[in-house]
Image: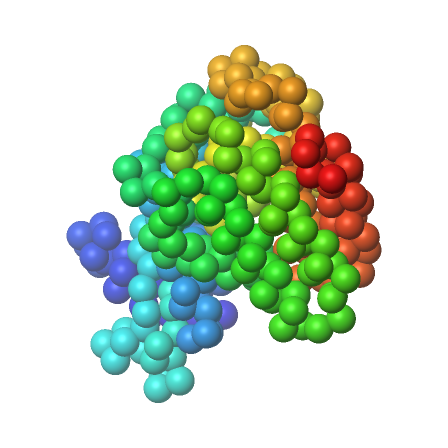
Length: 304
């Protein structure tokens, strides 16, 4: 497939010289052999592209080299269009990484970098993010909140709105509202934490190693500033992240107080992803969400 002219123009600006793209599908390849990750979306995907780009920029500020470096993100205009139908379509260009599976040794390095760099990078604006980000295809309508309980409640509330719009989830949504009323305040309001930068979707499919260096890489972020422990939950749900990751992580960043509620907080943060997967895929994920809520409503002190 021939390259779209927008990428040659962007790379010429980035590199300060004329370039020739000889392969237009990702990875995009220059005549010099250098490769980049490039994609063009539909006009409706503009906010999703911006969310990913802003997430990568924030991660690069917090932990340089931990994620592919963003080179450009924008919208095709009359100067860069190939055809009229291109106008308004978003484009994205970043470093290309040849990614392999996360090894146990790289998992330890990743754990240290998350604990000491990414999850040490705090916001002066509070909890949230300055643009919407997307967890999978689900839009997270971020804003800024003074407390973590408010921020997380808003994230859960966004999923409830989407489930109600889909229909057929009345009982599930009713139980989620009970969790919002009882569990979120009980578990999250007592926390004394800073809003730190999260990847937002840190499951095993979004982590790996750079095959050229063996160093860990994270990608496809849906970032916001929140409780560091929220980044740990989804990796336990879908497997693939070695146990050494969690052990090493807490050597550098201990569990938040009260530590005896750590597992319950993990259940609450996993609930978010089970609800999101119900939005995206339906099926058995609703049952998994209900199991988490049953446990929380049974186990959290004062929530009966």
